[in-house]
Image (tube, rainbow, N blue to C red):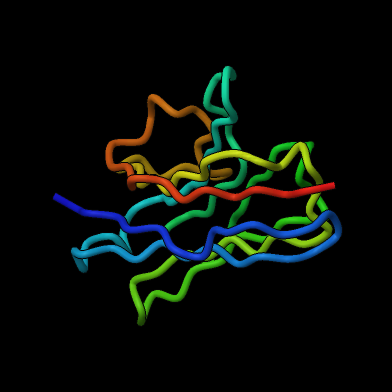
Length: 126
């Protein structure tokens, strides 16, 4: 069973950048679709970005398209989320997830993801 650990969250100002990392304990992680989701207080968990196991296809929520970039380093068994031009509305707990089903484009629905990290807090001040 893959265990996922997110790092890189923090408190930043609007317009700043952050890079989140998601490291997996199991080598089989490289065969899974990986995604990032976020949940703000009082709101439902929402899709942010996803990437296929081979990194050839990505998908983004409209709210982050052009500002966030998802990538993966298969050698390091790690997925990244580069977040630029951060806005206060990006404030949330960000979760990394892994899906056993590989599709093109990668799945965007939370229920399709089997493994989840514990989350990392991102706070953007105005």
